[in-house]
Image (cartoon, rainbow, N blue to C red):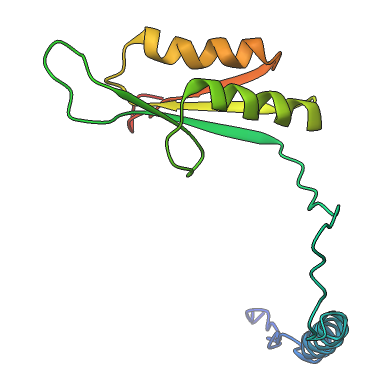
Length: 152
């Protein structure tokens, strides 16, 4: 009796690109139509600028970043002037930051404050910012610290 190895039929499996091309064309048509409608809403025109307008741009802030940094190089005694700023704004005193926090808190009761402080600052200098956050009755406070790779 002669034994032969079974013969398997090999079928080439191919990826059908036709449905993928259809989906891509439909997406292109969709985004083209959406961009056309969006640009139709923003027609160039000269808008009026009333002298005594009561209109205000509404901007709801969900978080405020307060930066604490030294104004000059730190001496060995750790003394130096500290600059406090809200976000990328220029430095300001703590009283004006407290007023901004109180106003932002009225607009958003769930306001989050993030304090970024230079590591060379003393705790008392950062604690002053934490105190104005507490005075504004803001419950969500975070302090930013850099974690080096491998120290997680």
